[in-house]
Image 1 (cartoon, rainbow over the protein chains, first blue to last red):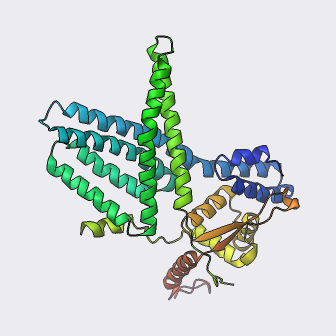
Image 2 (tube, one colour):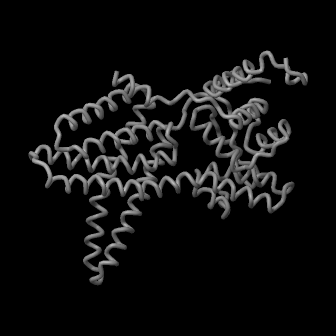
Image 3 (cartoon, each protein chain N blue to C red):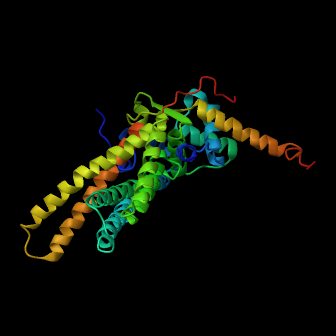
Length: 243
Length: 121
């Protein structure tokens, strides 16, 4: 079996291994004619062009999504003292603010990685906006009712088309994955933190590392699911020729 | 009303391919069965005199494939490329329709002009 070269490995960080191998093959074909300088410049240009979106998406998801999650949660808890609320309202408010933060992480990644026209980006953004309104006015039943109705309408409408169903599947799966992994990471970090020397800085560093690793895992899962479900699967045209 | 608004927002906007996307699709159509990265770049250079940067070309190919305007398949690895396979591209029905529509728009804009003949009507 052929052994992958270092340049192929580098390119495989920003695209699939099969694609990286074919791209390097294309560059190798012209290397003799165009020279070493051209080869390395081309490789760098491809790496930058293909790599900035996943990297940028991760940074926006980790920074922006985390900020939204923190904002929604702190806004919810800080507003509890200002309003009368029932146990049901508290349960709804807490859940909605948490879910909004989680969809904000998906939206942040997908908007940069796949653009605003992408169905997953739109769904995640839609749910984040609706969730933001609901979690800001969580003590007002009519606002929460309207937001839940819109969220349900978005789900129903997205299930009408194949791309919508797949997009909804990606958002739901990545959000469910986050519900699972964030408590696990938090528990692991707190447990590991007990073995650290009594230093707040070390504990904050450990929590930050866990958060960044978790965000990386979420983004990678989102990218993988997106590539499996959303990629165009249409058959080639039989007579598409202008020749 | 709400359902209609959400439905239209969620649908992919019917996208018109950009200039470079059209050039890439036309090059693929011209090459037929032999359209892969290196040959597409060479065809564009021959026909337009522009040598596209590989970064721009491969991201455009990837984007067009995501828009379902192109499809690709990997051929068997060959020794001349160090055992690496060629990735052949084909324009899909969606791509063909989008390209035809874009070209029709150009044709409509050109009607009444005689740019190729050197004078404006």
